[in-house]
Amino acid sequence: MTTTFESLLPGTERALLHRVAVAQSEGRAPSVVGAVVREGALVWSGSRSCVDGHAPDADTQFRIGSITKVFTAVLVLRLRDEGLLGLDDPLERHLKGTGAGAVTIAQLLGHSAGLGAETPGQWWERSSAELRPELSDVLGEEPFRQAPGRRHHYSNPGYTLLGSLVEAVRGVSWEETLRREILEPLGMDRTTSEPVAPHAGGWAVHPWADVMLPEPSEDLGLMAPAGQLWSTAADLARFAAFLAAGDERVLAASTVAEMRAPAAAGGEGDWEGGYGLGLQLVRRDGRTLIGHSGSLPGFVAALWVSVEDGLGAIALANATSGPLTGAVAADLVRIVAEAEPRFPEPWRPLPEAEVDEELLALAGPWYWGTYAYGLRVGPERGVVLEPLRGAGRRARFRALPDGGWVGLNGYYEGETLRAVRRADGSVSHLDLGSFVFTREPYAPADAVPGGVDEEGWRGL
Image (tube, rainbow, N blue to C red; front, side, top):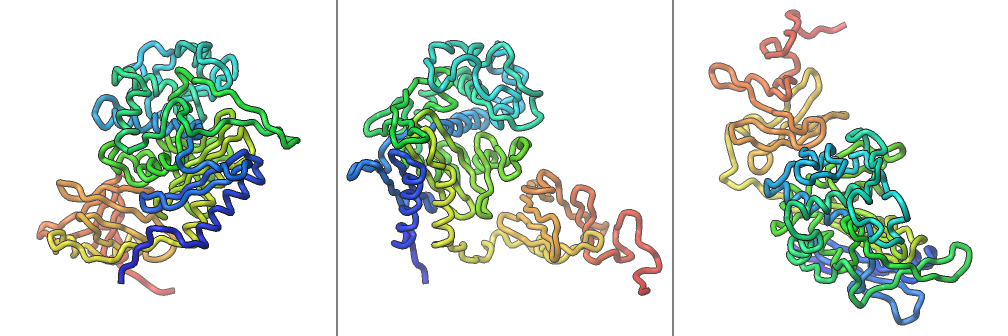
């Protein structure tokens, strides 16, 4: 029996709206909008407002701040996938005269280039872009705060450089490239550089009194690739679906997965999270969330995706501070994941064309010394090697065209696994990065480095 669940249960929807209501009330925000994506589709949105009967909806624009950086990172990864640049290329190869040209593109994407967190001079989020007409004005005379490549240090100027890199390679503006290569293919027609009605106004709420003050909305100029965009919960739901599964019109699933992998060591106290190639990575409630938070005067925002749960969530508010939108979006994911857990894919046998007797003969138990492992055959001739008891290194492997496999995760990522055969064609052992796996633990005839004691196993 097959059942589909295209909408959420009433109890789940009430719990989601309650979370948004608490965020608006306790966070003292003029309005808060939340939304949930399940299996690539927007399945819920809700909001609360301080004005009765005038709550924003999923089509109301809010400023999303640094969520903009994810879009910039996608544009850079598209250039890499097209062969126009390499992530290990120094910036100077493609963008001349910045004064920071020795840093690599990957370091800029992962915030490990050592650049300052902010621009010199006036508070850039509340001042005119005319004060920073050139990249030299964004970086200042001393752009570095630490040695490049050492550790994660968040940098808004770093993403200004990436936006300028996109413009230099494409030959058109960052904004035009964004519209043509991401927004139009994904149908995000309510994501813009300037606000388009209906949109929320940005407010500062007094920390010690229930009064508000309008916040200015500055065009960020060269800093736009770090935080310019306005968007809606509905548009960000489309983007969340893309970050979960990729879209061949924008980036392949494999490249989006690459963005989700940690790219740099975190700073002190960052052990619960990290940063990939343009994506923040956090651990909440026992699950990994990928996405980004954002803020500019008058607005806070967050977008989180749990790939394993098939869920994403967005939280938007029009207050400078107060609502913890990152926590709200994480809670929206948790509420749905716990109330309506994802159904596993049904088990299916391999396609007949993928059944390989030689590969099947390798399945089953193998021993690294006395550690027991099992080799399981998967789709497309891939395999999984996992400990049969206790802790150990579990890894997935992809088949190589010329035989053998390459590790896809964990300790063995990038390492080669191969079956070593005897002269008669039978399998002697498995070699994994020089580690030997045998069919029996230290059998006398096995090819164990260092040999096996001739007297064999013994008792006390």
